[in-house]
Image (cartoon, rainbow, N blue to C red; front, side, top):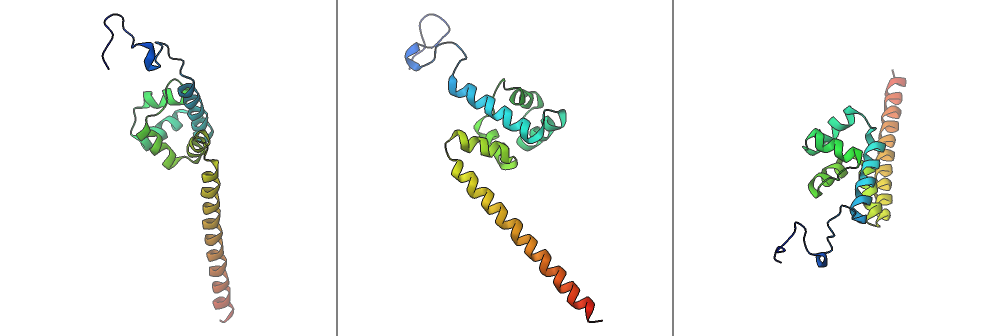
Length: 132
């Protein structure tokens, strides 16, 4: 594709109209901002936490929280790794809520297994303590 001879915008046949009103981008940005706020609150500590998770600049992270801009792909992966809210939002936007149910089910199974181990440890401790 070649650049236009005049003007500072790409031709309209590319789908770019020279305005920042892309529906999918705006929805994405707003949804990720909401997920970040639900996950970490709207505080300086939340910004610092997300910056540490992603390696992004704090100003960049503030823009994510405010909904001015959204994270890049690599940053979205890092956010999803650390925040179930962001992961769930991403999966919902992709129409894959069923995967979030599977993730929650796996987490519940792990919690049940840990609880069962703790109960068995208590029973073992009670049995050895009653013998003396």
